[in-house]
Length: 564
Image (spheres, helix red, strand yellow):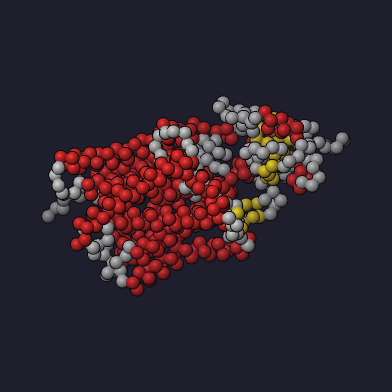
């Protein structure tokens, strides 16, 4: 008797194609390497020092080894594992991002397909993840977000599948899925501390969305909490023992809570406004307009969702013994968003330095909302299409509403596709950060490579010098308040002549090189204002010019006459 070949699920083929498309996007956007800035430098250099047998951390310009403390350790550890195979760290970061983006698209789509058995919802989910501009951006850089999003999707997806079955008998397969979910949550928090929100979401799910007996639920929570939180807690305890701080932050109690929250509210509204489709066609942004519009849209969506959930709950009351996939999936992601925002607000009001409230910081919220809005949108269309009165108006509504829902999703996807294409195209043409085409062709950087290794370096781009030349550098405090300087020193004297500044003493007495990078070479770059350039010329007047080009200059402090 011959067995009938199993047909390949067409939806699974579409998921695979979307995942491959995501891989291709990141391959193209990282053509010149994953973009890198100061945080990326710490990850990459920490992996290099670990490979060199010197520990996980970086060396300061004074020769002191500084252990990794601001960031969790898993990402540089992962990079160093590839280093043992002879792969350069930036190359490893690039190809990991390619795999992680394809993997995130595949897992997100597959979990939706597994839970909801809806081809169009699965494809829309995959397209939405593929075209999300924030994801394309961060997956193009040497950052921890790619692994974070992959681990978050895996953790909550596995937990949703584990809890979607009846839990009275505590099947071993469900317990294994819960364990793997906890391991993924642990990995997320070991690459980004906000991953602790995944542990909180998992505990909420095990307590509230679980039909197992209370004793079994508590036992599952204990295991999940231990696996997901103890590794990060152990790391933070080690960091505190080394630095007497938690993640290099100082904690305090704000004197005026509402006033402290004001910049958070303003920045949060601006980021949310940027999530709306085709914002170039919307009125000019203002906080009041954004607040009212977002609150209105949110109220309408919550009202429609509540009515649909109520209607379906009444019709499905007889199957109350089985957990709803919609309730599980949406509930877990909602718990994650709530925990993430609570953690973000707490760190904003009570720690120094405060986290930046930007699109990248809030990207996990946008990512989680995707898995809430799309399934609830499907539920709304189903609720309106269920059997009932057959008046002509209602019949038309049942035909129009699903088309309108899919159309609205496609409008978002089309808007995001346009923005994502612009991001990927820009990175394809010129790269980004310290790995961009401009940095790879920098004449100033080439001259820096030619300096003897024993000459100390002072630079306005110390992280770039460390990443690209493997030389720790002092920060150059600029003569004006400008984003291109890492710090600001209010002094119009020639650089090196200020007696109370330690870095200037190093420049004056040790023969250090002052390496200044500035943006003038590439067409389309925005050069400094005339005032910034005038101030720079003032503080470097009288210094010995070692080299000068359109993208920077290297100076030395004048040596006494007769001294070589």
